[in-house]
Length: 444
Ligand SMILES: [Zn+2]
Image (tube, rainbow, N blue to C red; front, top):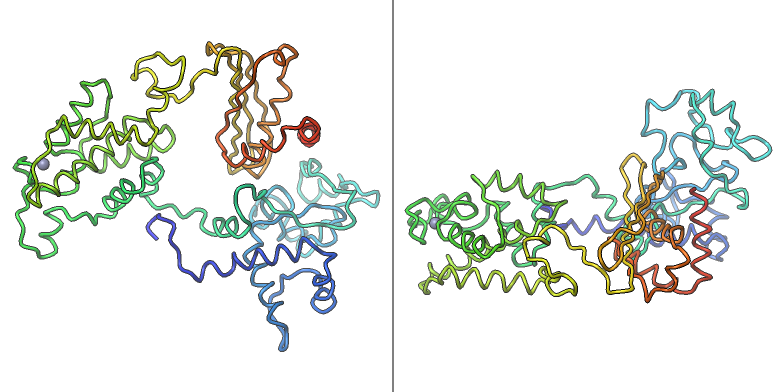
């Protein structure tokens, strides 16, 4: 609903059941699985039920329908995998790429038809069916006994149900998402959400709903108080922003609310602190405006500017002012949250990114306590799970470590996925770390 992520209760049923289904699928040797398999077969994806089918089986099948978009096949012999409709290349089924191949020739065939008796991809057949042989890159898991389903994304920091639930709302993007992603505190966020939905009781809003009010702005601007006015135009707002500017905290200005919306959309990526300050100022002006309407005294502009800075400080947004070695003025660090590590430490920044087309990249930058660049490296990869790409990015650090670095006091690794960093902290022990590196080598 409206971008806040509230959905009907009924939409949770399938995702909650998908957790049970995954338990069932991933433990084929369990007693329960073996019993059910005798009567209903191996896979809980069936079109319709017979009379007398057990309720448990129906629940498993319902969960399976929701789970389907979040699992992919590990190819072993390909007997269970439908070439067109199942997901076995990256994270999508060929049926979703209609121009990719000769659909008629592949209808109702299984992946086993593309594998030679020796257990490798049959290059000739691939060329005939697809006109190219890029499928050769897909790994055949010959060490398994049969085709196995795996989760498309490793559920680090989330549950399977949450993953399935989220994936059913992909692509739904409300215009107000820009403001929800601006990193504001809940109260301020809710205020802005209401501004986007035009449900803020400004005087002109009240008048339009039949209330007998004076539409003029109570701050003495002699103008109609509407959304444009309170978000971009009010005298009080402008004066506070000018005061902030004079303190060296530069904030943007906008012609009207729609120009502000455009800027907020661009801000989703850059997360400019000036923009955040602007949003906060509009919120505080609104609070003060209401106080005035209810007969309280008008706060002075300087007092308000100071309290806005105070609340920004509580957000921890000025944290880089407190970090050591950062003796730059506030204006210089407006656009960057990077700060140097302590003396004789290194800071390693890692990042992995993935496009919808499965093309992606890993980047690593190592700097010393003076901010001097030591090493920078990058790799391009093909994958479908952004969490795994972030993990590969951190594992990539191992490739850049030089002998002299062991003499230092320590390193700080910075990435942008909290759950991955938390997961990697389990690998403090070298042996485990090495195992992970072998995994990484597969991709290079
Ligand atoms: Zn005004």
